[in-house]
Length: 414
Image (cartoon, rainbow, N blue to C red):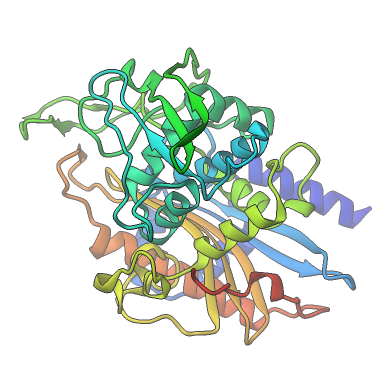
């Protein structure tokens, strides 16, 4: 009975944003003045954390216990590129649902334009054959957080499909309603998504016309209008707050749960997982953990010694190479002073595994869209410090059984 009540308490605490004693004590144990300052100023930095321990039974089946700090699913933060993670999974799912012979994640996909400011995409010089396809877009999303790759999957799926499929799986503190880093699209323009065609040689295998979405989010979140000033598209500073009400959102809890679902689909409750094949999952795992220097197509020589380019937790505070025995399966986001990372961290040598999700807000001047944020001074050092602190604790945490982590070993790049 005690064990049951404790489990209920942990679940209840996680969803009501209670600070957990263990996680808070671990943060204090880091003995870091800057981290202590961040913890003393929750209104400024709005640090949110979810730390999940993983234990295995005699059949290697995982069980999870989560601890939270500052978690608030109703507090708005801009999720930036983290929304690319569920979109990548849904693109694979939609292909499976179409069930058309020859239409798959390696099929040539042409994105067309039906109206301004939509653009077409019929070539991809970063792919081996110079043609765009979904598996390659997913690769670029996870290796370097490519915005155009995300936009093309968003256009293939459409607003309504993305949000409906997430909501029906229980991910309800989320809205994905726009492309990323492209100009000209207003709220209505993002409702229209481009025509798409799949080809085999010159034969059209599947054609999808332009789609209009009537999706309307019911979310009523705190602090969706933020700050004291904003920079407009002409570079002028306006003395008015920034309105995020028509921007993407994903709670840290939903991002954490989505990551868990993708990595451990057999362990989540019925109805939460995506309709993916084992091959689909392996593709996601492969690219979520691959480092830019490990990619052959495309090659990323500019990141040859920058493994942490999109790995903020543990290593985001410096460039260089990560230890070979550590792999991080994750998705990061950074924009408007918000830094987010949701990660499954594995040490193959020491048989350590855990999930850590983090978000911090670093925008001291409270001006949005001006590019003046304390990422390097505060945000990235904090996420790295927190990741290292939890990792050190995991190295010493006693487990009944060492995990068998073979399924997460990196596959060779092709």
